[in-house]
Amino acid sequence: MTEHRLIGTVAAGGLLFECESCGRRLGIERGSGELVILDHGDRAAQHRGSIGDVELTATVVQP
Ligand SMILES: [Zn+2]
Image 1: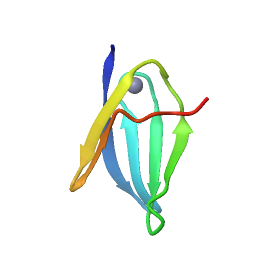
Image 2: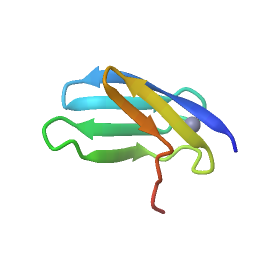
Image 3: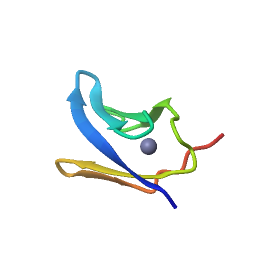
Image 4: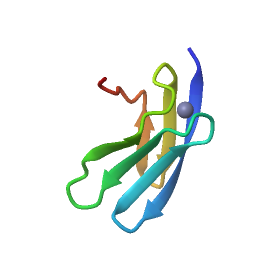
């Protein structure tokens, strides 16, 4: 399986993870901690990324 790396940045509303390979973007809302899909990118790839104490692994995205 293809593995992509997510680059985490701190945004105004929470955390933003962006894939350097396919353009997938995930947001984690500050406060609620809810994960929001902003851009799906390559759905077949496995994405990993971390920022500070927060680590993302094998995120499952619903169609
Ligand atoms: Zn990707």
